[in-house]
Length: 137
Image (cartoon, rainbow, N blue to C red; front, side, top):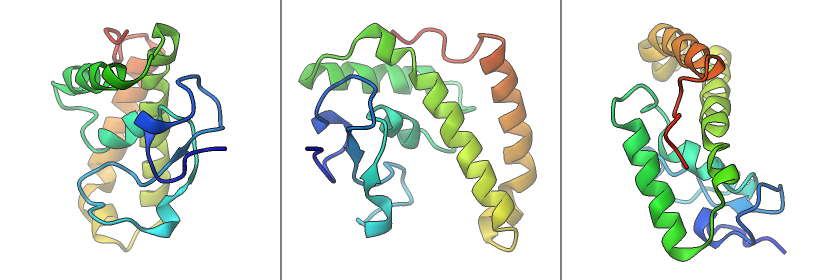
């Protein structure tokens, strides 16, 4: 049975399966638990939520390396799983871009829509070229 609401560190395994769950997106804007932010997810998706809106910062790889090291203090995390983190970061970025596109009247869409989309294109190209978060393991 999944451990609802306890996040990645306490998921049932470190394998990438949909058996895990996440409690809430781990970014700064979520300061309280909301039921719509609970559900089943890939266990390492929390790594992507932790860096939402920070994907183009120069210290992104350092942040995620530290996240992986902290995870490994509690539970095993195989290299092949860690190498999936860039995919989850891209997935999260595309999902947020879709939300922005579907909510054009929000402050977030008005303030960041264009630059966020342009950044998403740059990140997607780097990902496809094998240049995005290549030092994680």
